[in-house]
Amino acid sequence: MVVSVDIATIRQKQHKLQSILGSYPRWLIAYSGGVDSTYLLAEAASLLGRSAWGVIADSPSLPRKALSSAIQVAENLGAQLRVIQTTELENPTYAANPFNRCYFRKHELFERMLRLALSEKFPVVAYGENADDAFELRPGAKASTEFQIKSPLREAGLTKVEIRWLSRELSLPTADLPAQPCLSSRIPHGTPVTRAALLMVERAEDRLRTFGFRVFRVRYNPAESGAIIAKLQVEPSEIPRLHSLATELERDLRAIGFSRMMIDPVGYRAPGKTVGSEQPQ
Image (tube, rainbow, N blue to C red; front, top):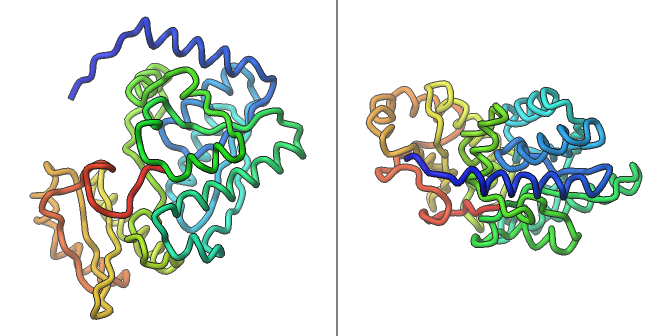
């Protein structure tokens, strides 16, 4: 679907973003490698050079491929990047997988970033919340408010569609990247988040990726019998191809540790349109 944009309005918002970024000499930016934070880091690096730092949180909930890709993109932007090891799985509240799980992950990240900002003399810390996010339920946003984290994209009024448009203009590889919430989002709320479960999900999604699927999820669904079911979701148009690969995929998923697999007949639906644990962060 082609979405029309008002280029004059986008330019006004882009200039406002650049003005916001120019109001501080250095920025420390929470960077995930996703659409929003990559665009924010790109604009900051273009304006401030090596005075714009990205900080990416590395933990078992971040796929290895996503981490390596994010590092490469940051290097290509010419931005400084600091990779910090976060330990949310050691937090019993996070590991219990409550509805507001993302709050605890963001809380640790922002707390660590503020310590880094203090030691490296950064006057401001920011993250990639956009203007659309105010209309979504985002448990992680509470942590940003508590730590007074800046949201330059939201302040400039930039929406997701506009950020994607500007990202294409800058030839950012993330311009058309699908949403990629952390691996913990594949585990139903109330089911403990463990390293073993996250690794199973990551390996299963890697298999789908090797078959050429681009938008997908592998849901980790424990059954009362103790079996672990892999629920596969792909874009509706890709469901027939997924069925054609079912025998091979089920064999691979059993080798990974799943008891069996099932294919969601409706396919993948964006957050807010599907029932499950995946929530905007």
